Length: 249
Ligand SMILES: Nc1ncnc2c1ncn2[C@@H]1O[C@H](COP(=O)(O)OP(=O)(O)OP(=O)(O)O)[C@@H](O)[C@H]1O
Image (cartoon, rainbow, N blue to C red; front, top):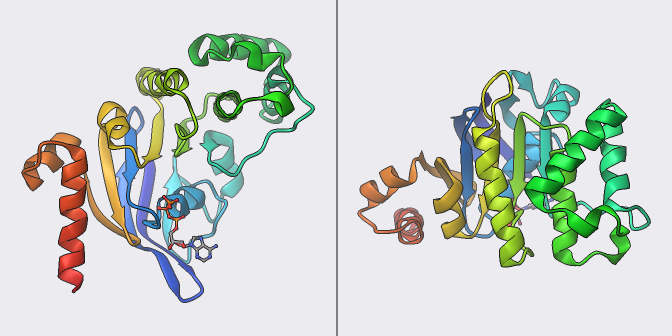
């Protein structure tokens, strides 16, 4: 479903992603972990067709991000820190306008908004104008907007940051349900980047660990713990990252 082969992204002389390859399947929550500057956002923005790869390839459901960006955009939902909301519109109006872009009928849109209200606890955000939102309210509507068309692939870049513990729990439960959901071709794929190891431990089936643009490992969390001999993902993460830094000296 997601196929990344030898993906490299440079900014001038700086290599932010270095020859990264992995695949991820529908019905998976796939974590992207790495310290600041690891290349997580670069990778997710490339998959979201917001950045062009320097070399290598990436495809989503067979659509190439470089050659078929329009097709890719139709089947992905993206949450990243950079997206604002129109201050004068209510949550319902924002979701309606996005649903319109995906060609959803008024009836489909209202049914989907009701479903998302139940699953994401949108509550007052639907009627209050975005200019009056708290950070958590804003993030809820950004997430609802990203999934309005029930995308095959959901890209969440640090989506839980800024959420209080209630909203964070709602998001994590949503991600877990998204994995189980079936829609003809199986569950959805969620790409989940985070700094918070406990979040990854809870929701991710497999994780990729990135460091300085290099992919250190892709595996299930139990396998990573076994391989590193550590008791939790945070310790395993440090062990893997330190191993690379030692080799680099
Ligand atoms: N537009 C750009 N021009 C030059 N360098 C960039 C640009 N965008 C990102 N970088 C560099 O690429 C590297 C990877 O950045 P990226 O944002 O992908 O990392 P990240 O893993 O998401 O980190 P963080 O968790 O801090 O957001 C960093 O060293 C960053 O400074």
